[in-house]
Length: 412
Image 1 (cartoon, rainbow, N blue to C red):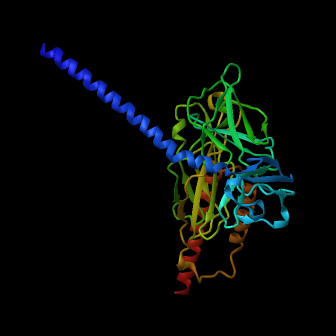
Image 2: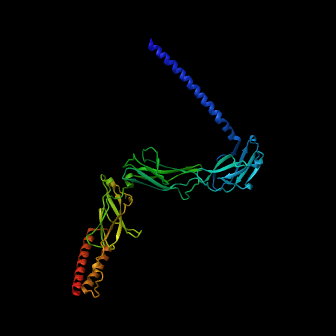
Image 3: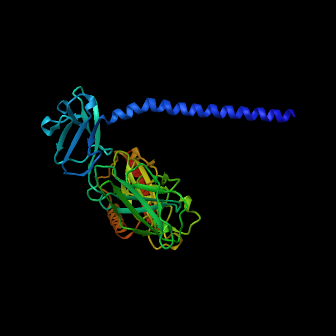
């Protein structure tokens, strides 16, 4: 019996609270109308027509500001501004005691993509009504659509907006893609913050071609790019080669050895890699590029200046992933790695052989011819050229040191 009474008491309590909640809701609604309704009514005491028009560049516009008699002012006292700048009085007319019109000719593209602000004011500067003018051009067909996949895990695409480019009004670009034969059309949703680039981070198929295109649209029209067809395996790029090391080659003052690692993200893929190396001296911004380093992960830089700091970078192009017949895409360059060539031995400076032997003269001439032939007929950093070069350089240096020692002993 006590439990039944308790349940009845709780039920009555719930009914009372529910009724109280309903009364509070009604009170909130009444207060809303009391506070907001007068403001809503006053906003219609003046209006500009047309409201928020969309116009082509070069168009003319006549707009009318109509005021309510309740304002107790006449249209003759009104003035107009565009983006905060007061317009000349000869551009507008008084049509009636409650209507002022303005005519703008040969409109330029909007100064801001959110629209230019055309405003009607009281004589004291108070804003009575406003309208946004959207003046621009329809988008042109997007061009230069290219895509790449980093390590086969994603897809990024870049495009250009067309020959004209600037539309002056907000223009939306959407990258779309689908599997060629049976896929459902999807929108790319991750725009990187850079203009005209979108990023698809996951859920991509390989061994199946995609169709990719860009759709551009604004309030004046739309345009669609050409559709490109690609396989993820054909557009692979990779991270820059890791672990780039640059070191001296013994005492050879004109050489440096460069070693690097292969792309770790592609270690489980069947592919070949092609590498490029570039280097520059410390005080210069000009890079020299070795285009034909091949698929090895080391190379010898020769013909350098003695006692000089060099900066070296390497990049990679994965070729033929899983049998793809298309070349890959070059990676970014690795971070710069610095090393210096050995300096010239100062003890040799000042010693001069004004009459070199005929043997040494002939040897140097032949050596110069040999290297000229090597540069003309060798490609990249081949092992044969390096070994031959090392043999010639070591022999020449030893011969020069022996010759200098003989000179020094003769003088003493």
